[in-house]
Image: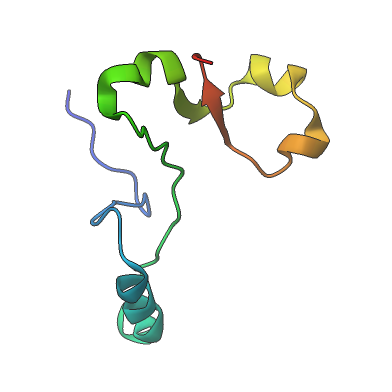
Length: 85
């Protein structure tokens, strides 16, 4: 059975906006009900995908990791670096 989207679930429409695009949305926010800019963590790989498996990736903090992390250093943080060096 195909599941539908939940009401009010955000739907990304653009990624990697420029500062000008973000400013344009902010200035016109009153004309764009329901539209918001949400920052997202992105890991940059200077050597391209060649070393991505070594460097790792960003991922959500799971329950097990949350118990072992220092709450002062990770308060308000939902993502951490996963695997890699």
